[in-house]
Length: 140
Image (cartoon, rainbow, N blue to C red; front, side):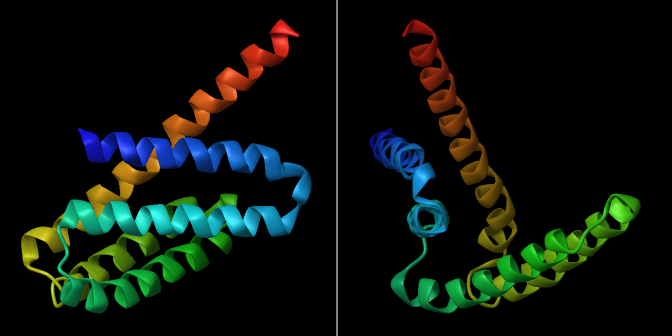
């Protein structure tokens, strides 16, 4: 429970910084993206219980995987949404095999669930912050 509290505290700090840096433009967003990426690395490393040696092998593969998914997402259009989903699934299947070269099969399968869990935690935290900000604005 304590690690979850620490993680949520980090998310709170990051989301507060994002709100403050909105006027800062691309530089503020870039800095916040790096903070979020660092929190994601810490979360995934903890949840997969990666040893330092495993982490050294895992993270370059994960970063390649993430870059491929971003490339597919960036190039998608409304007309071929199903095709893009299939491309993303194909990438996940291929990288599941690559992840299993870095960690055991059980943890390789767990990568995608842990990744989704992190996104959901961050999404909920940002929604909570936005709601609090909107409530604060209404009270003024």
